[in-house]
Image (cartoon, rainbow, N blue to C red; front, side):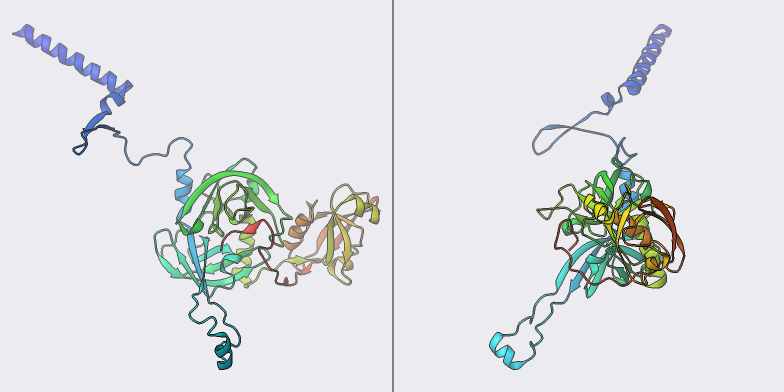
Length: 394
């Protein structure tokens, strides 16, 4: 009897050891289970892997989860304008009741919650001319929004809502973005609901596109479509890098060329609107132009880089500082400039009334002048959407 018990115990030990080895090295052998469908009789193999768990290697799940809660959908309505003589009986007799019963025009866009106080950043073209603005959060809460201020020159607008427990996005450093970095675009394209697309940074510092007065766009191939305007462009950590604004498209949909306003610019606009109601920018009163062989010959310019000044406003800040037509501005407050866009952005960032040193190339000499910028005049209204790239929100 004792011998049988010894054989049994040894067999159990061997089986347990074999089970331990298989469970360690080939756990899938033990996890495979067959389930027979009662309706078809087909044997199906189902995985026992948990429905939720850590993100797979290379997944951008965590970045999307971190940022998406703070991205909202924006629905706008605008009443249809009636003919000025619509109430005249004789006009209605001959032309009918034009405009009567017409439904309001609907618009669609996205926005990003930047503060627990309820401040939301979006594009100006999303809310421009809207009579009513509704904000829809990812958790399905809906509320009316109030326009705090707009900045058409950068195509940004600040809204405010009154809600508790608002999710807030974390601001990143858009100046650190490099070509090739992964980014996510989050918004509500075509009104289908919040959508996340991914791509890379295709270029930085894009300007001279004819979209805004001040252009310093992040270009990306992450899919951006109508309805994404005002949505978030985030990095792999879920930090906000830009506000999606426009696409280059011949079909109206994404063609792999989208543009976002850097968060560094968006932050300045937000702070200016919240604190003062408007964005205050510097202005020096010059007419700049890119260096070209023709202009260089006309003005006798020998500089290799910088921005040529072809005109100076009489008694303007630049004229009072001694800037002359034909000068080439190469440096503004210690920051080099080589394009008209860079000069406009640098001057706009100056505080009106604060003297700033400019380095100017004047023929063979480098001259340092101190310019006291004034306040940039309000821009004249300009029609949008006449060229490509185009804003893609409404």
